[in-house]
Image (cartoon, rainbow, N blue to C red; front, side, top):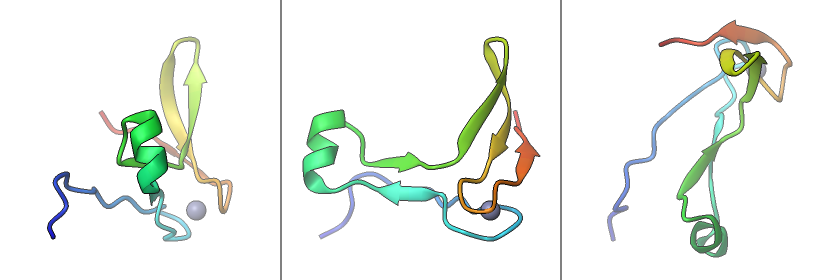
Length: 64
Ligand SMILES: [Zn+2]
């Protein structure tokens, strides 16, 4: 069986940890999402300007 939705790949540029977590079937139903990104948004007022890795705590600029 093929996944209906393509799961993107996203890795921390510093420690290389996979930042995409695929949700369980129950969570997928509950949140109506297939996956979540575990990186932490760092915002300046209302906009996210950088990301932080939850594993190594390094930050990098958000790409637009
Ligand atoms: Zn990291």
